[in-house]
Image 1 (cartoon, rainbow, N blue to C red):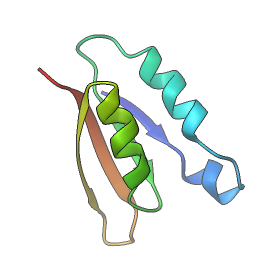
Image 2 (image 1 turned 180 degrees about the horizontal axis):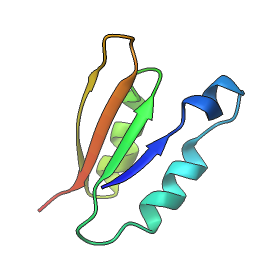
Image 3 (image 1 turned 30 degrees about the vertical axis):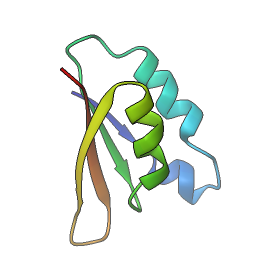
Length: 73
């Protein structure tokens, strides 16, 4: 599992999409991505789905989202 926390990027006004995609590009065939964001990353679901990933996520009590992306079998 590779963890990417983009909360600081977003708080600083930086778009994290390129950073996330760079990590996805380097994922091993058996590695999943866990993304930590301050909101539900709905637009990313479609982008990752187009790359062959499913997603599963939920919000913590403080509103932080943790979403796991896995390659489809």
